[in-house]
Amino acid sequence: MWSQVYDPLNNAWLSTAAAAIPVVVLLGALGFFHIKAHIAALMGLAASLLVAIAVFGMPASTALSSATFGAANGLMPIGWIILNVIFLYQLTERKGQFAILRESITGVTNDRRLQLLLIAFSFGAFFEGAGGFGTPVAVTGAMLIGLGFSPLAASGLSLIANTAPVAYGALGTPVITLAKVTGLDVMQLSAMVGRQLPLFSLIVPFWLVWAFCGFRNMIKVWPAVLVAGLFFAIPQFVVSNYFGPELVDVLAAIISLAALALFLKFVWHPKEVWTSTSGKAEDNVEHVGGHHGYTGGEVLRAWLPWIILSVLVLIWGMPEVKKFWNGVWAPVFEWPGLHNMVQKVPPIVAHPEIEGAKYTFGILSATGTGILIAAVISGFIMGYSPLGMLKVYWETLKTLKYSLITIVAMLALGYVTRYSGTDITLGLAFAQTGVFYPFFGTLLGWLGVALTGSDTAANVLFGGLQKASAQQLGLSPVLMAAANSAGGVMGKMIDAQSIVVASTATRWYGHEGDILRYVFFHSIALACLVGILVTLMAYVPPFTSLVIWPATGGVPVH
Image (tube, rainbow, N blue to C red; front, top):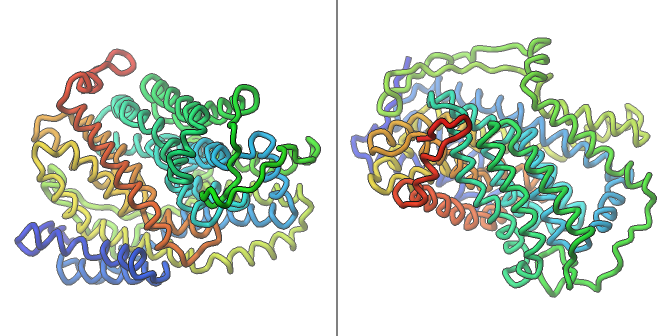
């Protein structure tokens, strides 16, 4: 067994700099040197292995085993989701159904700013709540590109929109997992996250439209933006504080989507219709009527694949359904050369803990399988033969080969940094910020998601550290554990696997560096705003009252 070492160079600065090398290599290759994503990912993976073995002293066999473990987790569930979503999209596009769907949305609004709210923010939040793990970016990215948005806008805006719902994604999995790893009450954590994020659920729709078309053009549709945000934020607060984390996103998204659609249909419409899909005013074209000319039956058939997808993703996300399918067949493997071979040590944990590495091949319970079934059902409804669907599936697989390689390499990199402890070294640097810890602790959550691609994984990684650091500094451990998750959601838009999912969904593979540069400022700016809010909640009345205000049942959150 190998014990992790968090300061291998006996100098915190040098050890932190060494730990950052894989991240710098990966993001530098993508963002500055315009290297293709699969090559950049492999470069980052090589750097992580080199640092883990040569600097942190991890046995080479253990390091390589952690990389293969990460690669397996990259294929299932992330790669499996994106493959089947794009398969469904290809089926609908080839039959002309997506063109009808695109035109039917103009029956609600022709304005691209408002279509962006409906699809990327409200509809995307539903998929985050029901499935998570890349599903919302894959679905909304494909839909936006089908609606005519430019590849950069479709990719970047899908990523920006997929922030505020992330902490309650996959039926509350990040918050539930955070409670398990910290030993804190799940209801208290749900309530605390639900006091940090609603403000940003209100801000993000404005930010999203602003990023798309500029401040002046965003202000022109502020009533609709406010409706989308307000009718998401209020249910998010109420459900998270008084019912728990499981259905926060699903209910808030449905309410937001319905409220916005009804508002646009019966109450308000913009004086000026924005038809540009590039976000540039000069690309606007003369507005034509919003009547698409299709019958109700044709529109219903066009939407049917996505309705089936929504229902099956929601069903597959339910714990009872997952438990059932895992009971049918879900072989569990103790990963050779890694399971129980790595030990976490203080100060990241109170007592030495052995790291397990069990891989569950839960293909029946995987969200991607629900998506595949939705695609097959839809394919038959659209008139495809089994052979015709197999042909489209094979062509989709060939199209996605580099994207799948990239996702595998990204996850391999993340697992090497996790098991080698290099990500903990980075986290410990944030923990040494004293009175500024509420701010930097929030950014630690952002870093965790940027590194791992998952709010759940970041909570597993840094949840215990947040609790311990808060207790040492006299802060609320619930506040800082929740801040890890709330800050983490803003890192979702820059994590490498999400960027690859976005580039794949929009068929813009090879431009991941452009997408990263597009979203990076938005990510760090929003994370800093979350950090400021958490700092106010830690020190400044009346914000501190949010920390001690009772959760459901009158239990103090502090």
